[in-house]
Length: 173
Image (cartoon, rainbow, N blue to C red):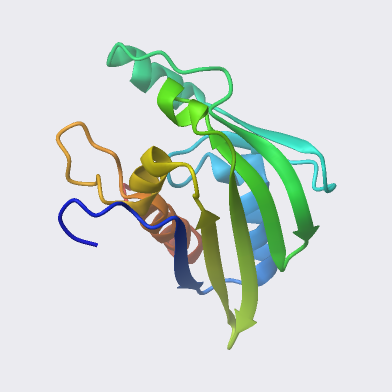
């Protein structure tokens, strides 16, 4: 992807983490973990198919946004559990609520697939983004060097998760 080409409508990210699938699963599904890496936020799951879930901003996220004059909603990501097979597969609908334009794009589909591989876990994240071009651009990581900052998308989130599980520290620490 170069120039003005749009971000792909299905994006696949893979990382190998020196941790068990159970440890990676906990880090993905438990709020005491979800707030420690990536962009943070406290995600609460009822892993029953059809159950809603929500990610709430952490105190640090709310305070940081307020310092920049940007309000943060009470829920920043929401969706529904489509499939849960701990610690192997989690499929969700996923909607970003922090920006009216992203919210208007509606729900996308997000899958986490975990496979034990030689004492490590191969984690594959597949984000199906059809009909969500702004979100596709954001999660692709292509906005990482933009003046307003867009972050490194899923690549950065997964790198941060890997660092935390392997070293006990995030990339920023």
